[in-house]
Image (cartoon, rainbow, N blue to C red; front, side, top):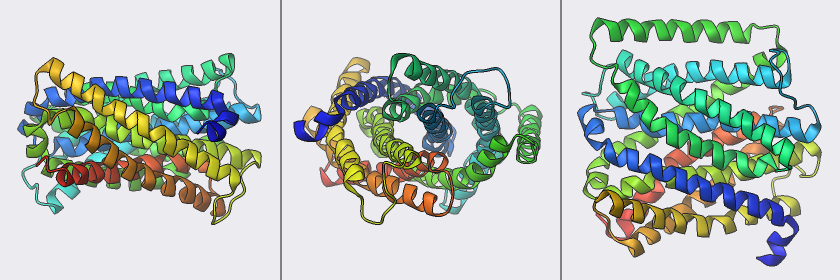
Length: 400
């Protein structure tokens, strides 16, 4: 380990600190999720939105951070109020994508819920209201944090590739669930809720068309490249939500598993995001060669991420156990919780490595920006695979 990580000791420290903070902040999301079980049961289908909505913050702003990291490495980064700068156009793109994907997410969530037998889920316009309001509330915080993190990376010499994915995902976890819960208070107001949902759909469409037709070249390109991959990511994340919804009784019986869930998904996605970000920047700089078999530099980054996974997933379980005891909810015990976290986590990370490397490779060969595609591909896939891997570990260990 020392021989492998020694050449990048600073990167190791930065990633471990970021992942540790991600674990601790995901605790707040897990506690919130455990505390709103009643709301989830009262509004069938709402849990379908949870992984997808939280994951979408990581997808949009993780990709934003990745593009800003490349701008830092290539010397084009600079904070300004002007719309036509690299940062200004990226911020505008993130705002438009937040609104558009929230509407798309609500539509996909309703369609998938009905297709998979959750016919009594809440109406689509109510889902639109919850999705859009929750997305806007959380995105204000996540956007400000992402810009501050980029500025801090320049000032203090951090490598944004090492800290962007974990920290942005963790902030999204923390503010995402409370935002969705607050948005759910707007449901059930009759005509007002339906009218509000319809207005949100129109605003999203107008913003998308205006952005794609804009004279700001970077803004238009980011929107054209981002919308398709984010829609696919939304579909994958919604299916993950369905898998969790159908196991809600299991999680409700052992709420400590529900406390563990956000941190589990966030950590797996963050590790894959770290790998995707590092590969993307090195491809832009010409350090990593695009090849079917990973080269030496890429293999070092892959091993770096896998080695980081073991202590972080163990920490996830320990923190979830402590939280479960503090709030007085049932747990299978520390040993079984650690075992479930490690087994499920390592399975998810192995998949994340494949997606991060070959997804980045595919994006480059198609002439697309790997910064835009890397993080959404990894985090959305992990929403699904991470949920299934944790459920598989729970079943294999006899917790259900």
